[in-house]
Image (cartoon, rainbow, N blue to C red):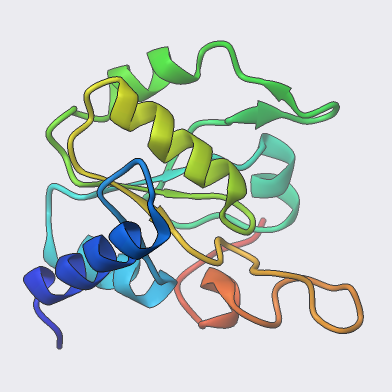
Length: 150
């Protein structure tokens, strides 16, 4: 298994190359390795409640909507929920459907003084495939990482 240091260095290199406003960018399998090897690490799933219920959940993730369904209105309580559930010194990884909302959440958390923020590239479902469906190419689900559906 790869070391935490090697994974974080690669994620930080990606952030530098992509000119990201937070610490790093992880691939889904790297995020899972960090969750398993770094006990202080937190995974924050910023998808909507509808996505958690209908598409699937990641066991152990802190669930805080970035936007609420329907209408995808910004969650005015995001910052309060984050600060009450995640320590500012924790290694915190953000995930959404495909990486856009989690990018915004990681940037916002960094602005608020969270010093170890990472975005999970590809997100939970990845980009759409040739037939317009998600969940088959890229992302947490397609990588075969742990998730559950009710």
